[in-house]
Length: 222
Image (cartoon, rainbow, N blue to C red; front, side, top):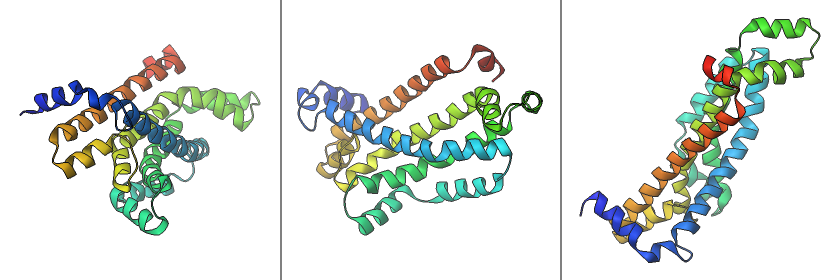
């Protein structure tokens, strides 16, 4: 059987659409892991990137943190967390957050530094406080690049959250891990297809967010 036949067989089997191992359940689990990890990564990376980018300090430190974060093997970190903490969702969240923080952190910093200094100086000259300069002048201009960093982090999390299945949790990785163990390649291909579809859906969601939150003039300039 070729890949298309595997895909057709997987999605046409009604057993894959119901129960605790059904596609809706596994998709919901995968989305939950993704949203939780992304929320934590944004809560860490976005404020640090905004503040350091606004004041123009700490760029080299952020670069080192980003390189270190990207160099850590996600699966190896998962194994280390499991050995240290036992089985649980925390073991999955830590590697996913470590994976997602660097693109958010670095992209946010670079987005803030790319803002034209002329309107920033003008805002300060008008007596705006630093917080007003940050949120009313710099952030609206930097927003497209910042969303690009968050989008990149979200795609990486969606693709990597399959590791949850290795520590007896759910998600779409369950199909891949169980399918390999059972030598059921129909299930493996189906799971991989669902992950790819979710990644494409994530791109579409961020496209919509960008259209809604970024002004037309800034989108054209970007």
